[in-house]
Amino acid sequence: MAFHFPRLDLAKAIADQLSPDPLFGASAGLFLAAPRRTGKSSFLRLDLVPELERRGRLPIYVDLWTDKARDPGELIAEALAQTIDRLATRAERLWRNLPFSRITVGGIAADLPKTTPRGSATLAQALVEIGDRAQSDVVFIIDEAQQALASKAGVDAMFALKAARDQMNQRQGAPHLFLLFTGSHRDKLAALVLTHKQPFYGARVQDFPRLGRGYIDTLVAQMNPRLAPENQLDPSDVMRAFELLGHRPEKLLDVVRDHALGEAGSAGLRQTVTERADLLRARIWQQHQSDYGLLGDLQRVVLRRLIADGPAFAPFSAPTLAQIATDLGTPITTSEVQKALDDLRDKSIVWRPERGVYALEDQDMRDWLLSDGTAGQ
Ligand SMILES: Nc1ncnc2c1ncn2[C@@H]1O[C@H](COP(=O)(O)OP(=O)(O)O)[C@@H](O)[C@H]1O
Ligand SMILES: [Mg+2]
Image 1: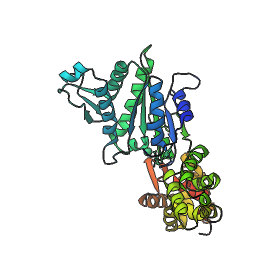
Image 2 (image 1 turned 90 degrees about the vertical axis):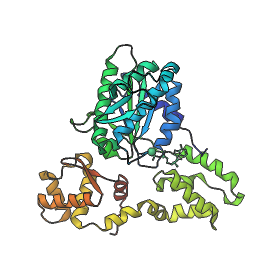
Image 3 (image 1 turned 120 degrees about the vertical axis):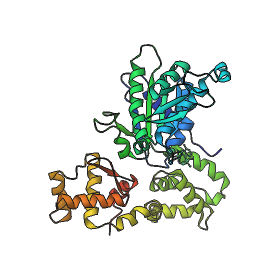
Image 4 (image 1 turned 30 degrees about the horizontal axis):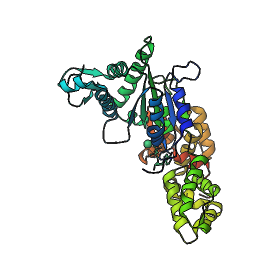
């Protein structure tokens, strides 16, 4: 198996929050965001799920990015169908005899494997059934949950989950339901919790912690014995490179391999992180740079304003229009700003989760702009 640095303390801390504890528990649901390829799914599958199992909970995990061609509502229903199948007794299996044979959400159905056709259940009914069968609290983990916003069935599934949570958590002495949502896109995830029209209104999106020095030290300890004595990696250099690469293990491994095997050896890595940090950043930020380079002045100003204001960005309010005019140095009309936003959407830089709300399509771009990646442009 590939190298995995275990994150037990983090798994414990998160499992603690998925509890009915009135002080520490996140009863509305826990929302964790971090950029893509930084280790969310690995943590959920390899650290959190086992920790929840050790505590006698029943974790159910679904990644809405496993197959972007499939409807998120269907993926959610299917995860529940598979769990019910796993919890079926031998007799039920033998007679293909479960209380229902399909689960429907928002008009989309997932069939339980190998059952005789029977009635269908809603998402809430399926979850209650799972809790009762397992006789333990259920933790439903939805990875890349913002993807649910991409379809009607996905959005319906989110509302159904909220209803199931309320229903299960109101019962006395019966299994509870805890919901954990993770996402690569903070603003999109926030769209699930920000407005009263959204299912988890009032919950808070937290940062999912990035891998840090512990991961680097373990990685270096594994690599150094395989490198020549004069070519040993220095953990501080590797850590610096990791930070510059946005805490992405795959990118780091590429860079470390290139350097360790290259002519300059590990000394070259030090030189790169100290003198040529821009080269490392460029590996990630090239795309943003070229996207941004193609924007007009007004589009850039509007984009920067959106990033500065975050989820509160209200493009057509008088103060925002005034601010944009100041930044741009000329007066500006609502329709010009509208046009700039439409252009940014056409270029897939900005998206609109609902009327009047705008967010960045790729969260990385924010880091890049804030680090002043545009200096000199
Ligand atoms: N704890 C870890 N130890 C070692 N490698 C990791 C760890 N977490 C993630 N990785 C590696 O980082 C890459 C991205 O991880 P992944 O979990 O898919 O990220 P995400 O779900 O945030 O997109 C994978 O190649 C994975 O093997
Ligand atoms: Mg993932």
